Length: 479
Image (tube, rainbow, N blue to C red; front, side):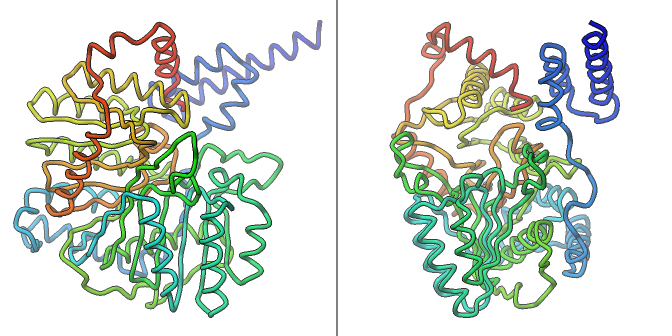
């Protein structure tokens, strides 16, 4: 009994110490703090281990080496653009963009996201279309291919990608592949070795250093590819057969990805280099050949990153600023819709101000708890007056928002706590009426493949569904 009493006392002391740390030292969001305190209260031993794995905040130290960023003149360019906006001297290629200079200013101050206006951007919503374009561009590479994905699989699509990477490496092209250790946990070692043996440089982001990976909760969710410094890809598609619609469970995969040419590719390149240098001992040093862009169009773009290493939730702040600027409508597509209070309030205010808000979510879960929490959050906005659509033609994985047919955002960030606070994400904020109009057209087409969630239908949900929603909503801050 003496040993048991001692262990019980030790557990209580550890729980109290951890609780004090959560409340007074780590300064978490209050909702998240209460959720973890409840976990510690009801499951003291397992809760302590769960917190070490899933709740312990990442160091706010220098995860990414910003020396290259300074050498690239990013800080200088950012300060110049900030001064130009403050003094009214930033010339916009499209006159209508002047009304969004505060959003551009926000991203400059919040994330050093340089604003470029000489870009050509193509929207890709079909997996075959996206990967055919990507493979064709990679086949034309003469200097380098920089590829980064959250999920890499060694299935049929993965093998197609590997064949191109190996071929280009054999031709003397510098090929680098960065994948997330958690997201790509099923990636076969033989696949990695095959690439390495062919001369492809391969690295994992936050790999396990011991038996267990205590950074498992912090994932690099970014999807980027940069080819010869001229062409860049960013968006929602990962590398796997399911993204081509070949998984019976999900069916057709509806996503959104961007093919970009122009100076915005430089900012995508910098993001890749910073991530690569964090993961690899074989660091990339500045070289002009990585930034070999040219004028390709007249689309305004800012590449915005966010992650748990920052105090600011840059992408979420951008979403809120977009929402608050809306005068006519806001269209959102997301597989996970679990907004925090600030984003939920922004959408409510928009609806109550007469702005048309339409939100589209999937009809099936890929993560059950997240799905039920999504339904619960959608129900809240439905009651406020938003229109909710359930996509029926397979699985909706797009992460996009378009406002008034003038500005839009496409990238890797979902509308949930994980994307805003735990994952490393990257989005392209687009300032172009033609592109935004194209996204509105795509959204309208998707509505014809969806069913609308009405108040009457939502109120008819079963007791079991209501229970799942309640539990999922309760734990949503730690999902």
